[in-house]
Image (cartoon, rainbow, N blue to C red; front, side, top):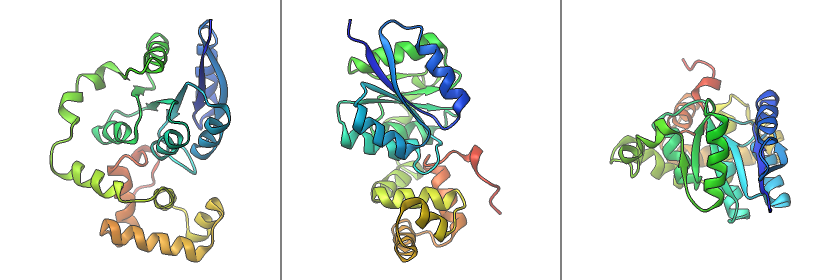
Length: 225
């Protein structure tokens, strides 16, 4: 029997190990790799080409939503299941817009995680029960603020999304440049483009936008004055 190959993308080691141990009990599922940030997840998917990725949203360097977009661009056959501790409408909507095949809450039972992996591998979708009950309301999105946020987010390049995440995480221009391997002037130019495209002209506003759009999770942010 051919096993379903799975890549785990989660920055917390103890959570990642928990998922690995849980999946090791399944005869038809094999964990072939682990990533601790979004950028590593994209690289490993390109190398290992797993059938399914369990992808956390809130990860350093590259969040799970942008990593999902890059994964599906690099290896379209791979299916992505988003993991999150939060079920806010913005996160679920952003996940489906990024191309994810499903959305699981981290408190989901082991049985449902395994079922989700099997379902998405077959080309189906899978959402945690509480999220599934709300899908008719949030997808397609109603006109208004969330629709406007998604429309603006769609205008951003992958590099701009990476810069936006690092800005929202409180990184200075030099830190952002070091993380991305680009020059400070290039970071400044990306910041200018972000502000122009989003019509937001301060760092606090960019951070609020990133949270509202589901690019980062609010639980990992510092308080914004």
